[in-house]
Length: 88
Length: 141
Image (tube, rainbow over all chains, first blue to last red; front, side):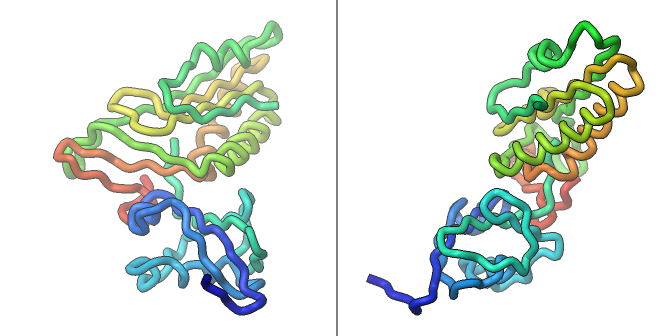
């Protein structure tokens, strides 16, 4: 069993479009210190993604709502990384 | 409540019209976005759409509500998955008492849906290559 620090939390990262393709999955489970801001998720993505700079236009959603990158996460949260959209 | 949907099968504009039109409406504006055979590099044969469905539906509902505030009844339907050249990827219907409100609501709805809804497309080319339009692999437009 893998154990982390007592205040570590597990969160789900949702990936779409080329991020999903690069990661080879649309969902990642990561363990981070409690209250880690959503904007810090990029550093927990698999290689080679995390070695590149996050796109400047990257936005975030937390549990299906738009959120600022400084918002702290709680255990069980779902964080979505939203690249520039191209629907329509 | 505005009528908003994401669907994996062909869009049904007749259903959107039936759901929005009423006896007090004197005009219905319809916008249909279709896959264009763009050939900047190699010919495009299809677009493939995917969505963050929960947030896309919420965002499209917010867009439709803003469009309805202009005095129209509005429906938005976006297709997901593969959309071949000539097929519809998005349909917007705005029914209103008079055409200015119908056109204005339809225009607002398509512009804001494209700008805000977390939906992405990738272009599938005749040579078998495919490119996501998400600002990373390629520009969004």
